[in-house]
Image 1: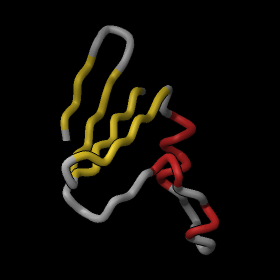
Image 2 (image 1 turned 90 degrees about the horizontal axis):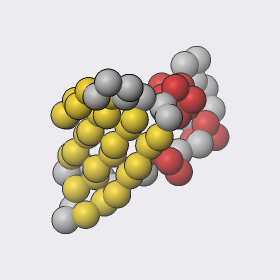
Image 3 (image 1 turned 90 degrees about the vertical axis):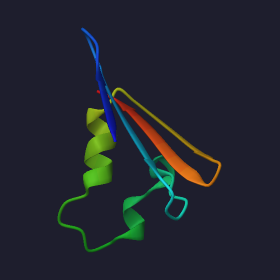
Image 4 (image 1 turned 30 degrees about the horizontal axis):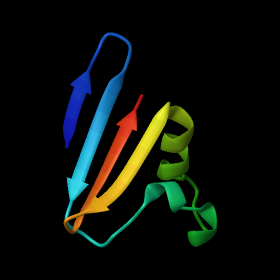
Amino acid sequence: MRLKRNEDKVIIAFRDDGKSFNPLEYSVAEKENLHFDEIMLLKNLASGIKYNHDLSLNQTFIKV
């Protein structure tokens, strides 16, 4: 995880070699019995999210 802060934004970058998972394609229907959905909360709080899967790595960039 990397964190970069500018005057008006924070960018959080995650990278892992786990199973491919695009948080932008996630839907609540995948987990019907949730009391709290962290991914949907993050989507609502972030001003931008980018995801790519290159060289067998998940890479997610979140701008807040």
